[in-house]
Length: 134
Image (cartoon, rainbow, N blue to C red):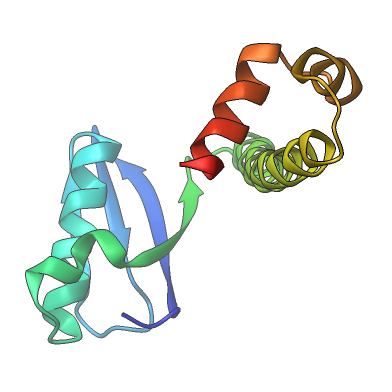
């Protein structure tokens, strides 16, 4: 599946969530809950672009929520952006922590010293370095 991101405009109307994928003619659906809407949107997109159902989980969707209150919409979008950034930083920190733990242990430092230097538990250092050694 390509890295293409489909923009999905979501609005709330009469107790239901409506979704439209502007770049795909006729690609719209609705559901009572947002998790159900996500599944429905994925089904609509794979049908519209003629992809197999197995591609549904691989789709990259960018949701643009419109609750009817612009202030709420902006605040929610800001929070989503911050959470995405935090997830990226956490993934980077995890990768760097693993590399640093391995390097420090390879240089002869004890598991406890490595833990203190990196600000993680000795158990975590052992997990990281044991996993790589096996």
